[in-house]
Length: 144
Image (spheres, rainbow, N blue to C red):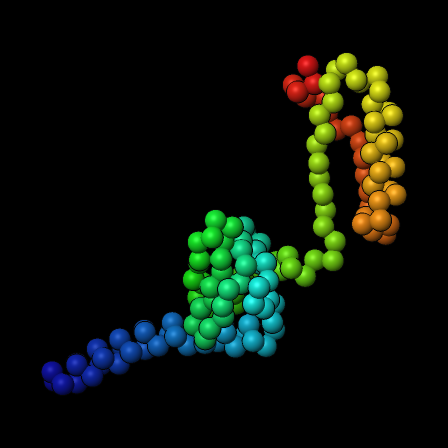
């Protein structure tokens, strides 16, 4: 009886431990087959929980170097159920910029908006196929 319960408990412990190992191996196989990122890529999760550069990829975990230079060790199983944004594969980048304008210059706002529009329209690094929008969004406290 004691021997049987020992083997039963041992079998349960091994199955619980091996479940995590198997799930991580499946995760690494999924990463290998789909290749959503590679070493050196800047990746993020859609929920914003992870953000950094891929330092290494192993059979059980991936190491991500965060912006503050602290490594994060992520079990590969997490990537199976998480949406990954690979920012390294972007072809274009959106820039949103608020430019403060003083109340004294509000009468010149049409000229200011025109000049900014001309600058981004004629800049060679701005993709002409992409949408460009320059507008007055609000008058804030900084305008005083």
